[in-house]
Figure 1 (cartoon, rainbow, N blue to C red):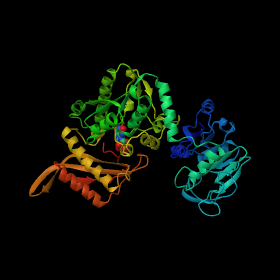
Figure 2 (figure 1 turned 90 degrees about the vertical axis):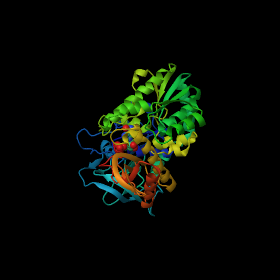
Figure 3 (figure 1 turned 180 degrees about the vertical axis):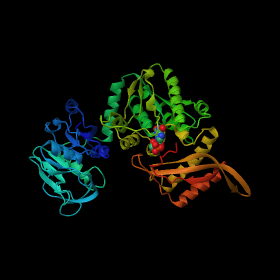
Length: 515
Ligand code: XMP
């Protein structure tokens, strides 16, 4: 299959380049800019994209594209910083230290370059683009000509048509550049000559064959959480090696209303997957008794999960593989360039944290896919849309949505309140307009009045956010009538809760979950 290599110089938009290329049905992978020549040659790309990035080309030790990028004889597209480093590396000039240009700009496409020919927002080759840069190219390298420009950025795009090197100062990968998709399609289809081969049916055939070859006749276990990734991984493995797959589903007592039943019905019932359903709720809740510190709770839940999973796995001595729902963004994150750093705000617990004492080989059937591709795959494999497009649910479940000490009584009240909120969001069409929504249990009692009597009961908070990446988020501006309905239903239907509040905090400074 023909593929595009994207070298990551650290821009916040780099993942979007890979997604846009895949949306154009061409397979692409993202690698750190310091990928070695041997790795690049082994990858055998049909074209290379150099991403944007935060650096200035004239700083000390700035990231550079490996020289071989310009020697392989294949097309290269530089975007923003990628354009500047291309210019600097090929003998052009870059002006640094300018005022940052950020936001919409109009540019004029000027020549007859195959990258932009016939693409325009307004007649005469005018394009609406998204700029985000400080430096700009001020002198063309030999062999290049200007392909688009405006007053403040006279070289907004350049090309060497003979060597098939192209560069754009703006970001074609963001939707604000209205014709960005068309430009990337030009690059990968017309200039690199890639066929439209990256389609779901094609992927399923390849993935099934690959899994069969990898696994042979050995047995596989998979931790099924009910989340999108493990569910889709289970469905794909079922398709590939059904009889050799056993899923372990651990009920930790912190799941949503009827979740265990739904997972069992879907997988064991509809898809015929072998599912080992372990009800460990009492164990989890007794370990959590008396613990109120959020990080301590997370650690206990993570540790107990490992214990339970390990006990179950040991009862399957024939299993040789542990399958996990790792997806491409996880792979990119853990690969990272040598210059990237991460900062832990909350210690996330996922099935990924299993110790290697199980001596199982790791099988990661989704590791090439972005989240939206995982969802598309899930639907193609017959999972219900509702399940595949569900909001994310954290590994520690309701454990981080019950503030302070976790008790069964609280979890039961929270489950019912949460189900009402989600039900009303779906009924009103707001579920798909929010990225994540849930109820939080506050261990506080407040006074209320119901009928003729005084009540003294618990408070819950509704949380609904809109976000692209879950790193920053806005609270969702839900209609007042919807909030009123949810509040009424919760207070009337869930005995023990007499007050509902709405969380109007953004991230940052708040986080999405309350713990
Ligand atoms: P925060 O609360 O940090 O959450 O703004 C960002 C996203 O991560 C999810 N989240 C978790 N997911 N294990 C998970 O698998 C965890 O421990 C965890 N904590 C938060 C959260 O639901 C939101 O989508």
